[in-house]
Amino acid sequence: MTDENTHFGFQSVPLGEKQGKVNEVFRSVAGRYDLMNDLMSAGLHRIWKDTLVNTVRPPRDRPFRHLDVAGGTGDVAFRILDAGGPQTHVTVLDINGEMLKVGEERAGHAYDGRIDFVEANAEELPLESKTYDAYTIAFGIRNVPRIDAALREAHRVLKPGGRFLCLEFSKVDVPVLDRIYDAYSFNVIPRLGQMVTGDAESYQYLVESIRRFPTPAAFARMIEEAGFKRVTHRSLTAGVVAVHSGWKI
Image 1 (cartoon, rainbow, N blue to C red):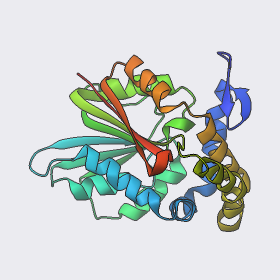
Image 2 (cartoon, helix red, strand yellow; image 1 turned 90 degrees about the horizontal axis):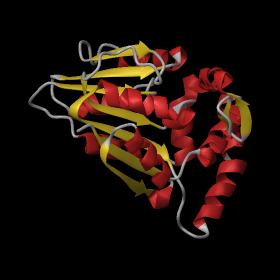
Image 3 (cartoon, helix red, strand yellow; image 1 turned 45 degrees about the horizontal axis):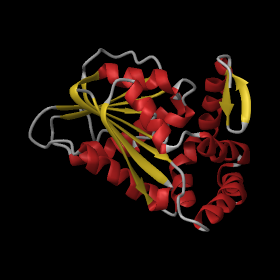
């Protein structure tokens, strides 16, 4: 990979074109994104997101400002708000307006005054430095063209003592299961995407993008290079996904 090129699934594309291609993927599937997550993971994505929120542990008795990036449909944000107290506030940030519309519709008036939705790029957050107590990004970091830039921005907007948490697909580490997982991913998921959303290509990209994401150890180094300390990762479901953590100290 050169400075001018990056990967889009298994393709090599100019760096400046990747974000537009990713945006089109999520515009295409926004309306049925959460339904597809249920079908693809047999509902496991809900458990994984619950684990992420349990790791955040938003307080119930004091102000808590949370930033959820690439979380347009609100899945993680609503969990944070339900777990936290009345002084918990979540900013949902996503580069894709269609995904944000889904989240705003789902939120309705249930969280008035406690949630806002911002359309922006994870690589250039239009937010003040040292503002947030925690930052989450679930299944979104691998779609960012410049992951290192997004990690630096995460570090910038967190308060000292703030925590970065990333839930992302990882490397299955169980023999035989890894081959079954690959067969399911490449043969079933795109066909399922075609049946449910009318779009097989977007889900082919999503499957390929998982395979191109760095190993947990390599991603941990990237988090450290962005300035985070006490960086750890925890594998879930035989390594299908991992929760990555880092602290701004």
